Length: 553
Image 1 (cartoon, rainbow, N blue to C red):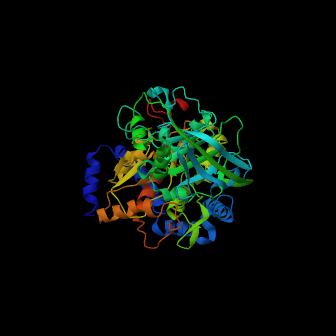
Image 2: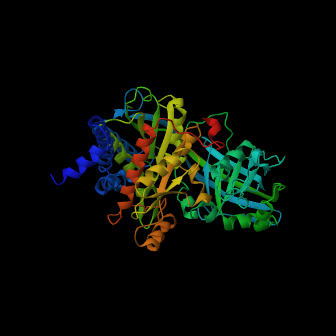
Image 3: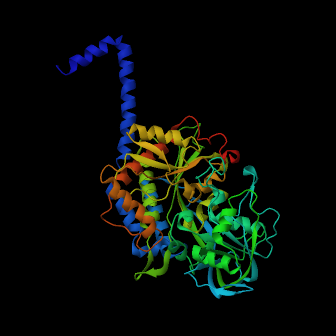
C-alpha cells in the first residue's frame, strides 16, 4: 500500500474518477504501442544478422553472380525467409519472384588499344592500363583509328549554363572525358556534392547521344572514390544489360583508363593533360582534338539470361492508406567468380551486400512480428544485378508490381555497420525529401544523430537501388554507418576507411566472426522504426521543394 498511495494521490489530484480512468487507459495504450514496437525491434540481433550474412556470403553461393547457381540459391533463401515470416508473395502471378530478363555480353580484346599520331604510336595493355566492354549485343565491337577528342567533364547542363561540347560533332569519334563534375564553386553543380552529371554512367550516355562510337573515362581514385583495381576487376568479366532498346544511342565500346595512360594519350598528340584539365574548368571550354587516333576491337559472346527480384508484402491495416506502398530494398547479388586474387576467385560480397540483405530480412521479420500491421502496405524487395548497373531495381521501376503512383517511399540498404556502435548514422539523400526529418525524429528518440553523408563528392545517391525509385519520382534515401564510434574512435575509423581500398569488390570481402555487429543491430533497428513511422504517417513522403526529382512525382 505504501507503493500505491502516492500514485493514487496524484491521480486524485488530476480530476474526477472518469477523467483519471480515461487518462490511465490513454497512457496504457501508448505504453502498449511503444512496447510492441520495441518488442519487434528486439527480434533484430547480432546472431540473426550474422547468420544471414554468413550464409549469403558463403563460398557455396559462389559470389551470387547474376543468373548463376548462387543467384538462384540466394533467391530461394530470401523467399523462404519471407514465407516463414508470414509475408504474402509480392512477385508476378502469385509468386515470390519478378523475373528480370538480362542480356549477358562477355568481351575479349582482339585488337589491343593502340593510339597513333604523326610522331608515333603506343599500345596499351589491359587491364593494367585500361578496361574495355562492349555496349552493343553484337559479335564484334570496334574503333578503327577513330579520332580522340578531349571533352572535359563531358557535361551538357543548360540549367547550369554549362556545355562542354559546344557545337563539336563527335560522330565516329572517341571522347576522352574526366570523371566527376565541376566542384569548386558552391553555386555551380552544388559545389563539392556530386550530381548525376559527375557519374561515369552519365559520361557514357552523353557521349553516345553525341554520336561518339566510344568513350574513355579517366580514372583517378579521388574522382571515382575507389582505386583502379576495382575497375580492373571487371575487365573480361561478363557484363549485364536489360534488353536493348534500339531507340537508345549506344557506344561501340565503354572504356576506362588509368590517369597515367591518359597522360600518355595526350602527350602523344603534343598536349598536357593537366593543362587540359585546367582549361576544362571554364565555361568557355571547347573540346580539344588531340591529334591522335585510337584503335580497339573486341569479340563478344552474347547470351540471354534470366534472374529475378524477390518480393514479400505485408498488407497495410488502414483501409484509407493500405493501397499506398512503402518499399524497403536491398540487392542480393555480387560479382560471382572472377579474376583470382591471392588464389581466391570467389567475390563473396559479405558487406556488399549480403549485409544489407540480412538487414532487410531482419526488418521484414520485425514488421511481421508487430501485432498490428502498419497503416500502409510494406514491400520488401530483394533486387538482382545491382552491381551491373542497378538492373533489378531499374526493371522494377519500369514494371512495378504495384501501381507506380501508389509507391510513396523507398528506404534502401547497401552495406551495414560492421565496425561497432556509433552515436550517429549517415543518410544518403539527406535533405532531399521528408524522409530526412522523419529519420531525425527516430534517431533523436534513441539519443542518436542523423548526419549528412560526409563524402558528398562520391555521388552515392546515384550509385544504389534507391536511385531507380527516385528516377520515377518516389522519395528515397539510404543509410550508411556513422563515424562517431563509442570506443576506439580513430582505430575504428581507420579500419572502416580501409575497406574501400582493400576489400571493396575484391575476393576478401568475406564474413568475419570478429565483426562487431553492435552498430549493425542499432542501425537496423533504427531503419525498422523509420519504415514503420513512414508507413503510419498521415502524409506520404514528399520531395523537398526545388529538388531535382520533385518534378518527377
